[in-house]
Image (cartoon, one colour):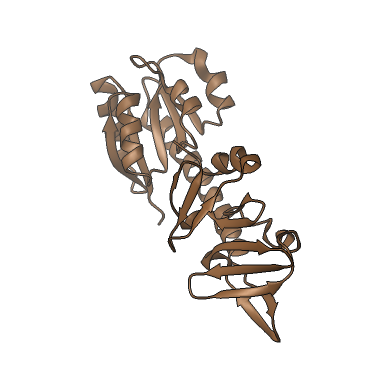
Length: 239
């Protein structure tokens, strides 16, 4: 059984206790923590990315729940828990899974958990399908050989006039062609990104970025071209 790792975020102790009680009744739910406000929530998520679902209050001091969802990049799935019905439209515009009005009965909570389970299961199936496609190998011709390339092992590709050099975790291959000629093969791979007129990189192989220069896991420095910067930084999903 897939466990749904969840958080409770509410500034009221009683509301926290009700949600913790309800969560304890469902084997599929795994409570990972309780936060009293959005600041605690952000600190928790920055340390622990493995959260699937947040039971999130709306009216809280300084920053409310809907504001958090607006400002936090790619948040986990959200079920809003609130005493106020007037935020429902905003909540569903943010693709919330559900909107629970306090006091929350166990029966209503159960229906919400079912919706969350179905939503997350479909999302996981979609990700699995994408991953299978992303991991499909392809072949390049180098001298008289056809060399198999596993996309997940790619580190970077460098264009050198009429040749390209493909660097992977285990080897490198020189191929006759241009970056444009291989771009069609790579375009469905969300983690392969053109960062310069002469370079494609695997975003998963970045150690860090400093002053528009990328250090890759093989210690290679790759500059980010001026015309590519906006798109590159968007794909980095900076928090």
